[in-house]
Image 1 (cartoon, rainbow, N blue to C red):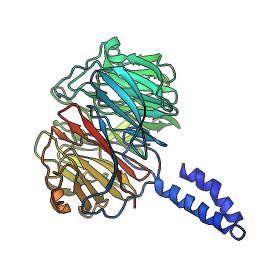
Image 2: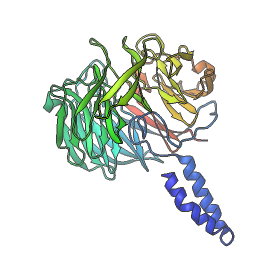
Image 3: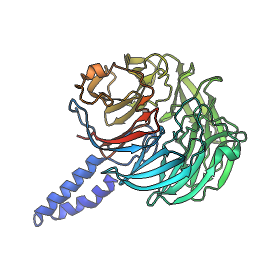
Image 4: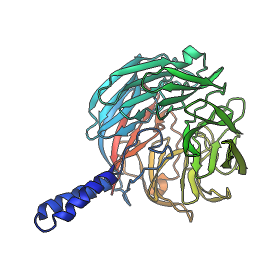
Length: 456
């Protein structure tokens, strides 16, 4: 967006340098402000589903108390992170007997509209009743998948209900260990969902109407959300399902197997795949491990995957997706319900661990330029330099520290994984225009969403 504004304003500035100096100052201010603001965060892991804040800039350091909180908004239950477009922050949460899609004002957190749908999820291994999927913004629509596998669509402007589909119930899908947790993806005018039902493993629906266009395969559902990859200049969708990774044509539903990935038993695939040019990185815990594949396409359009490396002692992530920067992966290795996870930097080409930080815990990560924001499941926020040389901590804060307690030193915060499973910040964060949105999780049916100023 800022590039478009820059294109419009810069020629105007060049025309009025002498006669209208005040206008020049105003235009310069607009240009610099827009460039500093970055863009939107329309869905899970940002605009490209890779954890990168496009055009975002982060401060070099924070005060000891951490970045300033602009506002905090009480929400209901669930693990769903938010999406952001223009002045709207879209939250998805459960309030008593309804799953609520709610638009909040970017600047104030005030509610702009609410759309409520009957909540049908009764719970699983986790006592939290959801929802778990990040809402998806596409054009003037918001699409969200509830914990029981109910798919909703509303207007981004007004919250008007447009359509809904009880996908899991109508197609006979299993809710799994934790309910539905694979965020849908919109490609063109099609919504794709990993439903996991027999003969309806992956389902494509018309975005405007919710009408089912196709049902394909019997791949079981995972908790990993799909991404796109260009094949012969056409977007295709990569799904990491329960036991397989597949490539799906969003127009027809036709699919190709890429690789087996997963294992039977009490396991899940939850971290999202990463595509780096022609390479595909996959990661999971539970003894599954990580692997890097080189993808190629034949003249007939068939996709071939060549294994480059595979290991379970490099970067095996339970559910947090790492980020890539300049040939290196940054993310956490291990499980939240096991020994404290480690933060690691891994050479993408070789699978070699360049450095690791023990007792770090499990954390989501967002990259902005050459800096990394890590949000641990137990409520710690850390600003780290993205470098393969060594772990370089810039700032850190314990967001859930008791009120009135003196702030801990950053290096202490980096190794104080507490395993606060019942109270923490497990939902995915979002970064838009210099503002970091962090939602808490709780054993009670109340959570909160806070907006933090993290720009320079």
